[in-house]
Length: 371
Image (tube, rainbow, N blue to C red):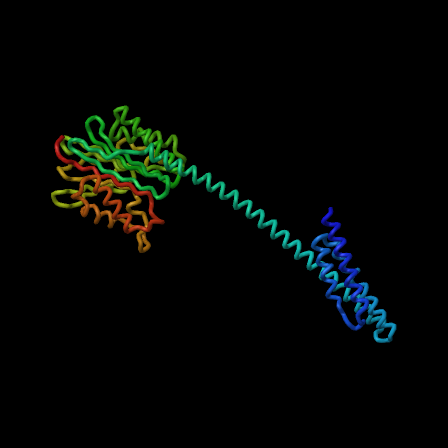
């Protein structure tokens, strides 16, 4: 209230000063533009109606000047009327323009304040999301942690690299009932939703192994559980292999996963292990699933990988495709299984765009001779 009162006093004072100056100047000297100052102040501090009132009052001295010109015979009544009307319209127009500019400034400031508030809210939300992702990444890293396998007759090396802090790749390896097993799976989708289902898959696989299941029985059991739990638009690709450490006998089930390769150490040749089962979770599993049965000789390595090895973008633009992985496996085949897995991932990363890489997992199952 005090600010408004002060504004009224200042506006009235300005009007008086300018009016007095205008009174003592020649009627031929027009200082009407000086009245724009109190009009601007009235609009800014008191609002539209105060500005209009000030504009009308400011025309008073000009009316007086025009009447003086008429009395001296220098202007007709019509000219005076027109001049006064035009001056009133100009003053009101100035008041209205200033009012709209002030309102526009106020609106701009309000919008800027609202935007700043929204930006602060977004920053807080992103900070919480970032914290949640860090925790999710830590939990997934802890829950999904699996060590390389060193056992009589075999060694298994493995590497998992997520494109973000969490990912949808799942890797597992170990020894069950005297046989070595390895599994690489990929949950459809990305980010946290896919990462959550890696935990589910780990639980299902661990439960199946603890119940003594393997091969076709295991895949059917896992797929049945996934169908009951996964959303309709999600599915899982999976490659599961079991190695007889005494004989080198290898059984593989590839459920919609990229084909694996066997690197034959004696010849250096690559032998593909293609799909032989449908995607998990999306459709009913047939009664009979094909199982690929092969035999590894000492030094041979089964290389399983996720689609990050083929679907990541190359440095020159297109996706990597199959050729790089086919070339890298023979180059690294003489390394220890863990070193081989690390070298394959490193080579793929070196030819991929970091910002367009997919989750990448590589497992190398090496048969070292009869257990």
